[in-house]
Image (cartoon, rainbow, N blue to C red; front, side):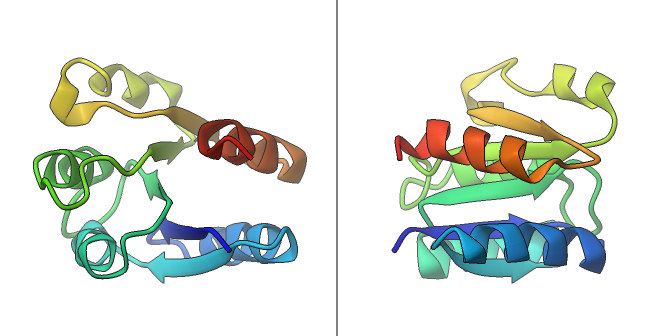
Length: 122
């Protein structure tokens, strides 16, 4: 079973994602901020990380940089989750902010699963 880490400061967003992913057979880890997400990524080594752009502690950009600079976990694919498309310009400017995709809020379940399966090769 593949493991996905969801990092979002909004409980409802985490619940929606967790429900959709759990029903599709994924193990789901949750973090309410970027610092916890980074720590969980190091500890649990998920197959995929889904990061909200705007979070307390570490933003999605800071968390991406932390993951990309850590040799233990820099291979983990990252999908950015945002309601503000203009925030995406900050990603993929350099290898330390490289992402594999984005999910636009509000979510549609079929789009979430399609994007995740494409990134994971399922």
